[in-house]
Length: 245
Image (cartoon, rainbow, N blue to C red):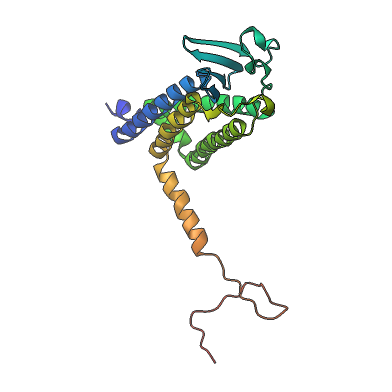
């Protein structure tokens, strides 16, 4: 029926949007797992076979491997000796940067949910596609901003991990090992890679448009020709048929 045909996008477009939905679901699933996993900043003690973990969901955790056991306390919990052993019970409070990372991670997950709903709307309604078509270039740049949030988060975690922001330096022994844990890598790589795949599926044309505009901007830059003191740095247009005299 004509009405039913026009009510949904074309089949080729639907395949593109379904692929985007798959990427976004996979991205959201891995970022959620990474967020729950508290092993973002890890301080490991090989001799004791245990480690301290600081994540971004308002928890510090102490984990032992033999026997396998983990206990967590809120960032604001004062009596850390209740669950943490010596040295780890004197860790620093969560820094301002960690709180920023906490909110960034929430914003990233919220943006994934938004883009998932946005993409599902394309799959279900041609009317929705038509309404948002004129905003697709803007939406592309907004989605790229979300990628920037992941990059900012990476730099924050690198800084927090390798600048002694967890344990006072005088308590740190030579065998203590700082590292970025599996929770962060699940959130960062597991979430970012399929998210970029979704961007490519959704906004392939807009990516090409942005690239073409950038190339045109570079090609059409005017040449500044220094002449006399009064015209130095001015733009001088040289006709193509000008003859040397």
